[in-house]
Image (cartoon, rainbow, N blue to C red; front, side):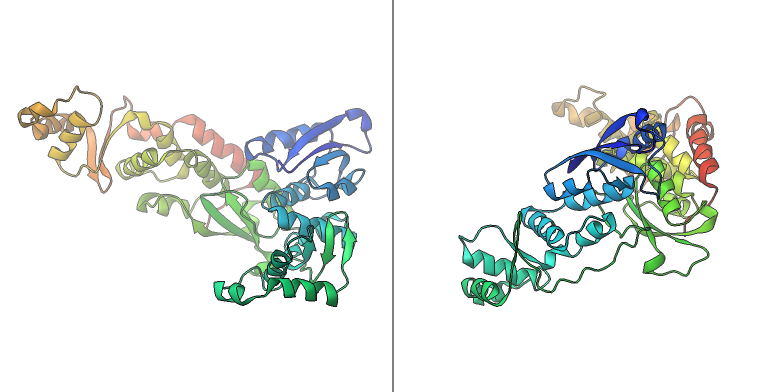
Length: 402
């Protein structure tokens, strides 16, 4: 947690205050929006949340107390600051103080530029000051040869002799001619992956040309409200109003679901990522084999398979009846296997008897068999997942991915 903010409706103080952590945990995002709706604040675009109190290790943000902020702007800023090390935190606070920045848009843009500045908080090690300054003025990178040849002490002395530093509560600031790019213009947030995701999707309004200035980024899985509000910020009313592109797909490779996701709605695809994200590697391997067996045609059907993996027997790496039988007897845990009796086990015979009475097949992942009491078609068509998809599509309209 980077900060904690107490937010209220300035127009209706009798509604009370909601205190929230930032960044907002993904699993709490939807419920957070519902809490703010009770206070009649938390609009996707407007700055309608008044900061009554703010607690943060970034003391520069105390300037926000009494100001009206947009929830998602504050959340995005907190995510950016959460990635900063001690040096970057000093650079951000020092430059914000030097430039007297209080506007949220400026603070967000500063997070992408402040690394160009040099902020000295400790004058006891001139060599380290010089090295840091050299890196700051060279994009944060330098070869080992460059650093070995660099006289850090001389570099630090020249910095302090040739430039006028600005004394701030966060150190002495040298801006090094920093140019603050306007990456954030008040609508779409610049692409920033805060935590690992399974899929990166870009969207562009259909009435605008493709290009960085019109592109909005989604990192799945996300909270459903995050997707809806991101679309609103981009001026997109429904999925039919946007072009979606899968920029990066980190889902486990499987030809069956690769073809499925290309025609899915963003919300069904997000739900699929929500289900797959917490799964262990062994579970994912089993699901890949299950998908090959069941041949689902929609993301909802894949979700139903993932939710019912316990109805499938899986022998990873088994590609023959003998390998299947050996896995079941030696590794499945269903038998008290004795290696001293190995020559007496009829692995292939055991496997063949079970294969004759099961709906299974060998896949590139191993042998998979369905053991449920209803047909695979009925299993995949079960109501809860279908109802989820209908609810999401009713909220934002239908659409597919390119």
